[in-house]
Image (cartoon, helix red, strand yellow):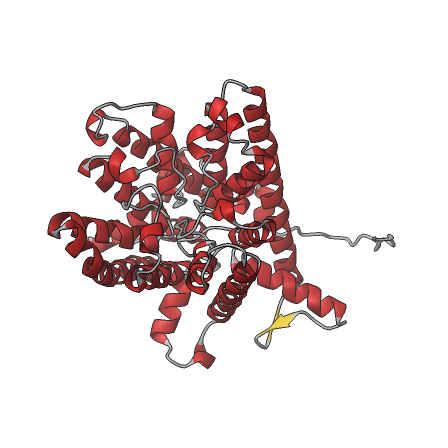
Length: 451
């Protein structure tokens, strides 16, 4: 595998980018056929590309108001497969199948997988890939059962089981796609089975495979890896804090405590909804954007800049203010981690900002986009859409179907960059990011006024 990329002069980082891109384009052509759509018409290729990219990037944004009404059984199966491949990563799935039949990976192949999974060690990459696949299959299978209790009586055995499988895959992979109509889960906001099961699947997928396997292996919390402790701690803080924030900033609406809790979970990168996010207060929307931007845990099915990134930045800043060495869970946080985290956040914000400016420019220049202008969506809806796309969340103010082709391409780019990770994108551009600088001399420290 690595030898093929080496012959083509492709770096492991570029291989990751190309693997996702390849799946997106294959998926777009599989959806761009008449028999994938119930209307019998292929429609616009860009719309099908957008849908495929949203599925592979496990985002959930779509130009089709009702996925269930738009696609045939074939189209829904393709969409489900794209979500599954996108959640796990093509290289991980490819590695699983070639090792399943007895083929061993050489050192260079392991290096490629290591970089694709963004882990630091060569050892255990194959076992990690296998655990990822097994965990996904087990959790998704278990997740189907509660959904069947609701969907089978309502839709019948065949349709009910199909919806249950699709919704379980979409929930665990934090994708946000559903087959329940144009209003997402609004009709089921009082159905505790659907809502709680969806939340549990989203949270599990968002914790990350390393975290899940670590908890499964070690029952005692003191034996957990630091990443596991960070992921669990940050998830608890963000879910509870987000729910409290969303509830109290939207007291004038019909939002319930369960709605606030559900949206707090979903904001960290799943994209389902039981209430209209556009109806939130300004403060509520801001909290939602912050939750989207932070996202899920490292090596998870979710997006965002990741909880560990924010943890490192927060702990380092707090320690600096207190005049102490940065540490967490009795472990020192190296300065390099802080620099990587800050760099990631700056790159992410920069990409989103550029995307917002381009989209706003496209929509304002194109006066022919009557629906967009009549509904007065404006800059705030574009900002929300851009953050949602990059963080691979999928919530929207409803502008997605009405965007111009240029804006749709920008959204696809943001989804893609958010899924593969901005650091991976930058690593392709600059190999210097992937190697330590070896200096034979030291610069004199500068004295510079900051602030």
